[in-house]
Length: 301
Image: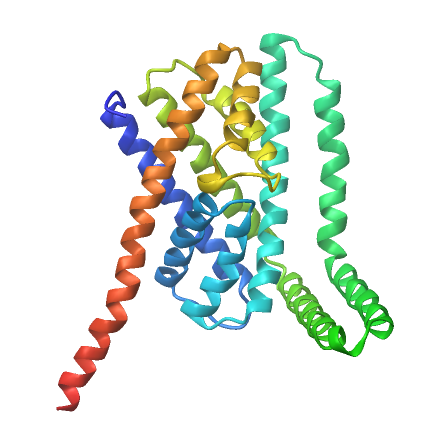
């Protein structure tokens, strides 16, 4: 890490903060029940990203509705509904980034573009269909659970009925999110958030002395991120991301050894920034309520 150029290190950290800011904005547009302060949403974004980095097998995803509930008192079902919507936007932005960056990479390296195009053309309609029919899918799942509850014994019926109720609540919240029709602002902030992430990767790559273009980084990083969607990562999200990073950057012409090493170094740099920022916010959130309680006690004396 001592060889990381300070200018590019600051640029990468600034891009990470910018990404968190855009994430916070889209949370605000998706939460329907109340107007939430941007400062609280930024704290949620920081801690949510820390959870994604630390917890294995995508368990960190559950931190978003939990933090939203604890910090802003938003219901867990509304948090889960907005999380489903967020991941739909994210996947669409990644697929579009993958398609456009691969067009440029193909022109350089002349690899077969047919499978890339087929991959995007198959997945994109599936995402749209899932997004716009998510309410129907959730209600359908609740109906299936209702039939299952009639078959199982009395001991399991109560827990199945509880899940069924929660699916109905998530379906209602998801319908309400769609009814707000905030597609444009959420799409724009999602795109800006991911562009900030790509620039962070680019800055760290340049900081480690790798001479590479921004579009190559977009392509390589998108391959890594799409592969990392698989829920098989270990603690700290190590392993699957590096494998995807190696494949993606090897495809854009980086030697295999360099692709492996840069994947480890960049992941470590992002992990450190995320951990430091997340620890600061955890410390602040724990101390701030104590500070307010003491202040109120002094006033009451």
